[in-house]
Length: 284
Image: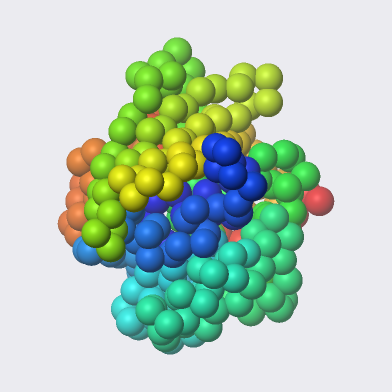
């Protein structure tokens, strides 16, 4: 799945002057794909490159699959036992109808059990891992991933880099606007990011408006800010050997990843990419 899809199930939502709604993107998966198009399946192709590079087997779990675009790409790329997991029933229904091929199941990434050793790889794209905002939630995700993976299985994740915000404010506090048209209606989103240092969170406030007369919608969410060495440490505690941890190129970097792109960078950019292998031991 592509950018920010996990917003759809972790975001408090308010309609000004109307009763509380659920979530604009959860309720309208097609709207999500219109707002975050990925016609070249860049995220799925990047994940497939990582899986191929490190020799992953055919059984792949796309954790936080959203509308199913990336799960379907991995399926058609040759992984014939792909499962997409998400917490949103609307997203899963849309995925089954519009991106068939994988098996789609409902699961909470913070604690799930889809069978011991059932997968050769777990893919977790678009900062889905960072919606585990507490240590307990992060432990729950990594414990679940370890249980789901066969020995030697891979965890491939792509996320925002907490280290980028050490001394940098270029992405913070200034509203960013996007405009797009869906089903003849012009939609606008205004997004502002801020850092909650005490909670180690990157908070997002987004206002949606449309030219059809509907009231504005406010949605607020947050990502956990993880730092590269912190991520190495918590992965090692859960029995994962880090094979690669870098800032790009990747599907959300600028310039973005492409086939044949150069080697990994440092760990200083605004995105972080990790590939880790399940070992036979854990410190838990």
